[in-house]
Length: 148
Image (cartoon, rainbow, N blue to C red; front, side, top):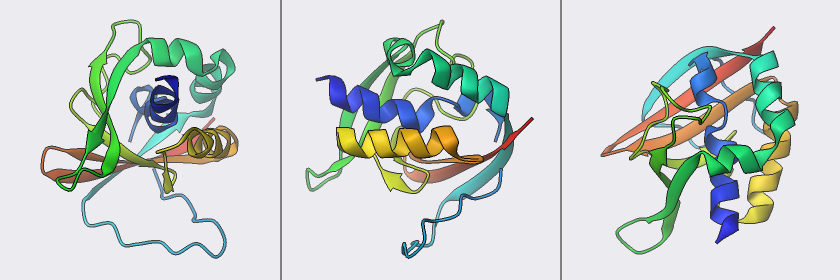
């Protein structure tokens, strides 16, 4: 199924291009739950990010293998990164790695294709990127500010 792979793209496309930045602002009127995990801030080259966006999602998706992850109750929990191919923009990343379950991008869920598209468009035009993921039993939020 193609849609789950597209959803993951928004979650991890930019992570290895940077050192982990400030939080994204929540959309007006949106409730933001406190995050109980580790928060890692960094910076990301806007030019490098735009280069990934310019190529589009297909080359990026082709550089990963992912699968849907479910919680103990059988509910969708996110997308688990199974493999990052050597030609992926994520190759060598110290932030997002195989085994991680990506749950949100820029505060948005990524379960359905339309959610992916919303997260993609917001990330593409944002000045920051935020990714929530579960690694084993711990939670991490990577926050990057786009810089020149």
